[in-house]
Length: 315
Length: 191
Image (cartoon, rainbow over all chains, first blue to last red):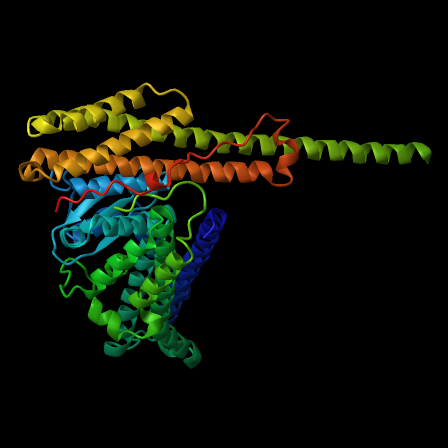
């Protein structure tokens, strides 16, 4: 993990992100068009789908983080009560050479954390009270470093964006299929629509949500791995993050504030029953054992640090 | 015919000169950018060191009454702080900071022997602040050193190394602790 390699990785990642974002937008457009074709208005469907996408994206851009925080019932961190947490966030922000994000706390005894926001200047890191009750300072540092990596890599913007697009596709597909099922194409014009077009529309309506979800999961898994590596680069102490991941994974408590939409944002997917049942391709996070093994591998290479300067404190 | 040939050669030379100057300007600008980042990272270390200087009198004041018989440790911390504040130049500064870290480590070790101190809310908060500040200093140094490495690598690799000296850029030194023991952090565990 040489420094320039990491920066190259970030650049490549952002390029891929942009491509994938366009891909998802195109998918949404195609889906809208297909749905429209069912009712004899392909172009109208396309226009509506794109308009919906634009509105959604604007809402995400300006209100995404506050919506996520509200959905998780997070409160701003308190300098008195959350002294250690705020200190750790400040330390890691210095290590990353960026200004510290806003810090929020979720009053929940299940340990977990996530980052959101549209860019590093508008970033928010949210942590459950259970996380810093159950982790020691080193481990907390590891988790915060992981979250700040998400911020630094622009993962926060991209994953929120992808989540919204996937949600929109699922909603539209549901809507389209239900209409077909219950009402069927009612207008006479539709009887003129050729069978292949209708068939294609049905197939697209069935496949679009699934493929969007697969794409989302693939992106999310890669992001998590990168954030683990980036976090280790910040603390120069991968072992602490590995321990933290194991603790969070092993914790039996359920995070009530998480739901299907926000689950992929957390450092370890809080809907653990889903992650265990889910096939590999649908998982939003790589298996925790795999992440831990990767981090411990870095330890064996002598920390994987850039080789310059003194080791960071390990507290 | 001959005139045309000379013209082509002149044009080629002109093109080459333009390319070289353009490259020189781009290199110069990016090196200035890197150097400014470096200075910013250095300033960040100073900010955190200052934060530590400001916290220490508070700590000494808070624990002083409990530690009647440990005046020596407290004096050492106060003196080390004064020496660090007035240190000149990076080398002396590093030495003074290391001495201060050592003195604080001793103080925290002594605090371990005083149960009332360990339970004192104020002392706990101050210790957390100092722990946090020590970490900030260490991470600011780490960030500085990362920037030094990027800057130096840029200066010393081809083709930048050909003109870096001419443009007035010199490699920077890493902020290193000279004593290996100093790499180990102060271990504070009050829980």
